[in-house]
Length: 400
Image (tube, rainbow, N blue to C red; front, side, top):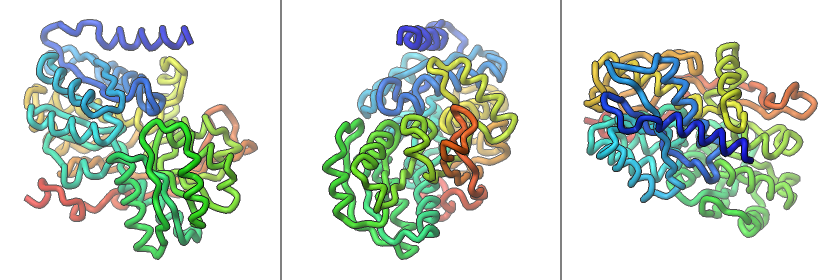
């Protein structure tokens, strides 16, 4: 533990080494550094942003680039307070990551008012590129529409005809449940109920009993991070997995690692990035793992921070300055995206970054060849089918 704390302190010291220097472009990584999402984003996203800056060359448009961390503690008021301080007094031009969609939506408004830039990587709600879209915001890695609709299609194909939800009670969880429901009902699946919980719930027993008594074919967990690990683990302890299929709508490699392959095997999940996809992703992953305080492999949200920061810096270089956030985002949309982690793609007018999604299945213990060898590819969802159609989002930038 002492070694881990020292490593985190070293990362943060590197990030804040010259916070009062002049002629500096500052990037703020705002996320959960200490709670249920800390392993999925946390210092890993800080490291990913630092690696992007290093790989870009460390400066842009005549300015040195610095990365600073912020812990929003999954509280909207704290996240908004940090964002205002960064933009108003500390010269931050880009705020990136933003897990917890309620915080992301609040920060998006703040950034728009000050004409800077926000890029969501950990943020999930598809509202960010729907009714709440902004000319100053880009949504990079995934969203609730892609995960909800994609996994509902997969569940229907597996013969599931009814579902009960256990849902995180905030913008992300509610939207994830809605997106899955929209696709499921369209396909003839019945929704038999929903039980909601706050972030960081320790005991899911009362919610699991409701799910069990519903008699649904499947129990869908519309939560994330440590909440997913704890709820799925307790569901298996309750024996729900014997008669009801467990659907984790956001299942990442850290969840699999915490649950163990024996418990997680067979689970299907959708992600836009996996560390073991090809030689380029493996090379990045091993660099990342060597520097991460816990020696974790990068997940899709870490990859999203890295790739989006690189593309942002290319746009700043093209515009010649980070001062006008709308101009920088317009340049990001005008340039095709191309990086070693996501490949070629684009950013739509609504701010949605477009790339393929991949349906994976968790391997059995016998299939795994190493400590992070978790997934096998089932199918690829093409970029044009992976995200909500532009016409259906209700983004004012599109309708206007």
